[in-house]
Length: 118
Image (cartoon, rainbow, N blue to C red; front, side, top):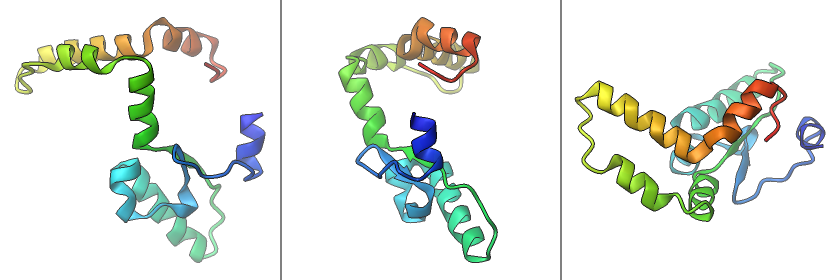
């Protein structure tokens, strides 16, 4: 259902979702640098007549609200407290733990199914 709404452009922008057509470099704080660049690219190519499928991004607000709802902030603070970015093995270990705490088995089950559903 979401896929059809996205394909048909019926999904509206909200505080959590922004369409590429509506994103510019000024939106980096809202959607991040890579996504803002995709919005710029979409806009530039569309103006030149290149047909590019419109996509969407979840905003930083959506991410922060999801972390809040999951009660994950304190866990993240504990996992990342005292991190020495120069110790790559420690950084990798903490990143793995963080992903597991945030996504856990649900992400692995989704990947195993391969259908993209959560």
